[in-house]
Length: 518
Image (tube, rainbow, N blue to C red):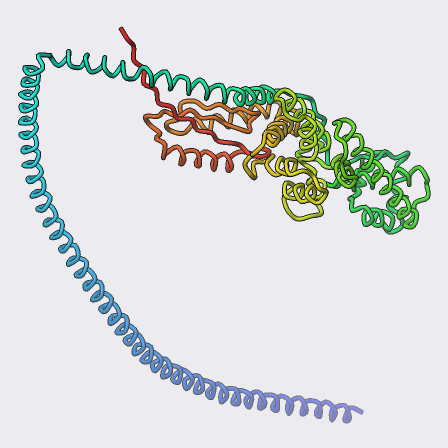
């Protein structure tokens, strides 16, 4: 047993020794392999470094060559540019030198001309003195011949002229008196029309929205409908925008066409009262509302005809006049404005001895084109002229409509009255969307612009701001300059101010000679 154990121990020790020897031999082999690899790597690194150095040296040479070429190119271009600039400077110097030479020549010529002018002036003075001496000698000779002094001769000539002009003065006085008699009636009419133009009245302005009250906020959901079909149907049929916001128990209708807005308002009120709100019912109610509005238009036209005492008018014209009830101009109701213009025309025509019925008819129809201005292209003046010509209105009425905004010159008294009445009704304070304070500020701004120009003495805004009269200093502004000043003022007013209609810029220049007899 001990022998076996001893053998085993010996075998283990021998194995350990053999393993140690193998391990040591392996380590030595690995070290040899590592040293060999390290040596190869160092050689490879040295080779790479050498290659990199050679490439760097080559690129450096190439870069130096390229840099030298670029420097040479830049230097060549710079030298060329310097040469061009020197040539340009030389040309400019030559031009300047030529100009200086020309100026010297002109200066010499001016000096020579000045010398010649001085000589001529001296000769003219000498001739003037000689003429004065001759005149004095001739007067002396005349006094000796006529045995009258100069003052006595003047008095005698004046007395002879007075005697000859007595008859001519009498004839001229009679002519002037006749002219004054002929023009006094026309001037009186103008003064009366100007006085009437200062009248004022109250006017209620309309807005571009209508508010429909609701019995409860639950009705808003029914009006909108499932997925908004009801409100879309109503907006499509009427052309009006329905605004459903947080306003309690109310819906706002927004549209710039008052007729369509009125149709939508009536239809919506009927739907709310009926309670059945769906697309088919909406279409039915919109049709009923349109018929009601058409009936209201006819009633308004007939009311205007009766109120202004105008008869024998085509029924289509009556309907168009009724449509003006649903039209506004700067928030002024056009039908109310037309009736007011008709009354003013009738009053002024009666005062001036003109046919009042024709004047009222022209005043009522002057804005009839606005009833179709949303449907037919063109200005309301031209539309009104075409419509009245179509329905066989008289040429005097058509001319008054054509001239009421100054598009053509007034040829009749009726046209002038319609123009004046339209200005009275439209531009007076309160008629349109403008309060009294803004009206005063607009007039002050108008006068301030006109007074800011050199040569303007005074300026007055008249006709409710439709006209400005400017007094200019005649010594500073002549007749030719007046045209330029008027145009500049008109352009500045257009650029700096907001106003309805148009403004007439009227410049006045007057020269007076005053002397006192003592």
